[in-house]
Length: 197
Image (cartoon, rainbow, N blue to C red; front, side, top):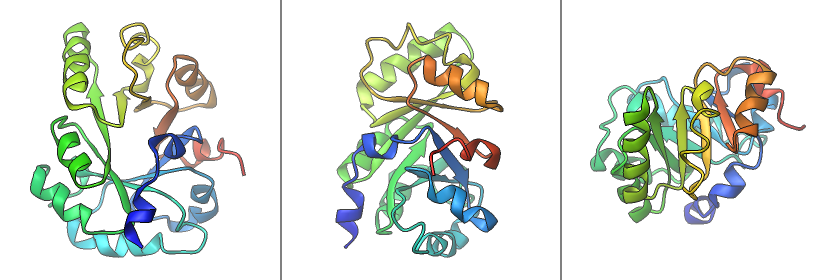
């Protein structure tokens, strides 16, 4: 049933280092199957059911799916949007830049990843304070290249970090992991290959 699927821990979702960001698996089924979670973004709300159906494939049905609430066209990025997503039993979590939605997600049994765009020191301070308030299951730092720079700021924050954006090579991925992040999100099949088979 649905809830058993949902009760994944965030740790099991971050076991492998590259999280594919896709809408549909397309021709990369085998590569995507290696991951420990997938982020869905880039499609329209009316096609969400069809996109989710693609993941009922026997290779893929083990994957926890996180829907990017802000990046699905037509999905409200508010509590109603989260309630809508919670009805789908193969959705494990949500990704959003709206930190207060982490609270709604938790209430509805979904994991939450809050994205922080860290463009300057003010954004870092603000990010740390909102994360302490809303306590998401994980934080996604954007762009990934700043993960190293802010590692010290997040040292006392015990929420797992991932990073995304402008992560283009294996060396970039290794830098992000060395900074204390558990995984990187990527739209690049070349990076998905870094997950073990």
